[in-house]
Length: 410
Image 1 (cartoon, one colour):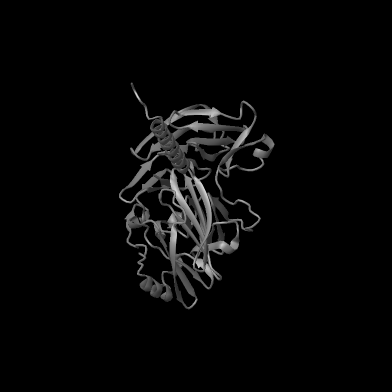
Image 2: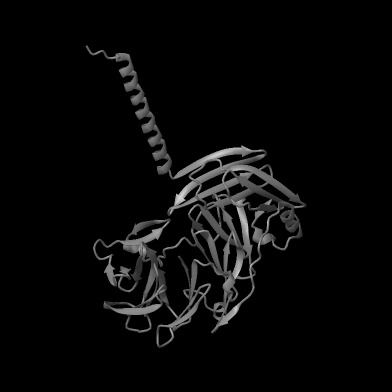
């Protein structure tokens, strides 16, 4: 005779069932955490209110914070992989000296402390305060050290280069009418491309690892395209089967394709430099494309040819900012006012932070969170970690800076 404990068997089955449910629940939680790419949170620490925005952009993790107390507002951006943690600010220390008030947030994760300040109740970058005596006192109290940019320099041909200020992940290209200077922290190269000078209507750009130049020196139109490999330091060229008219310009780059518009023939092309293939994209449906606010948009012929259409976020229009010089880069607005550049995390001027000031800003670009400025005869680089730094000085930049300098980020 065989006897079975039925209650025991049922209990074992129930335990297995509940374990399976728990495992599925844990897997779902982990999946949600892994898939989730953004969160918004509001919370308080002492007398500060904090808006926390986490997001993922191009596989990098970012946190934006807008921190307010009764009198001041502070904008902070962190580029840190913190396992998508929430409410990561755990404490805020406050320091005051006369008209200067600074905060030092500390975090739940191991992140180096940094300092953020307002001067006369206006947010300013550390770069603005480098020579401020009250700021030096606060830095001493907070035990925070800020390194000043280095002014050591070398001369290379017609350029002065501040090589210690160049980040390892950047290269700079300067056009000198026949060829290019390629400047990095540890190397300086000159590459001749043309046999005669090209001053006007310079059609060139950077895509992937290539500097690309459309030879526009002939009155008959563009037939030859040069491309320089910035990694292998090799120059190559190829000829087009059909010429593009001299009255052409580069719209910009999208998904590693160069977009070109021929104003005379009312055509738009894409160039795949790797395949050395050019395609008339306006031929099929008589539609034209522009990359605007991070998306490709379609235009009719009449609308497209009313003005030159460039793929950038320069001189955008926004009802909250009445400035000609306004840029938008991801979640941020940047604007120029009286040779001062500001950043706003929201479309609200009261949340702006003064980043830098120079005597004569002639041109400026925003790439990710980095700003590149032409002031007088010098190219500067600004970011919030390292401040404002001189990069390259060239007498030519006094007179001509349009389409002759390029920045490559690896």
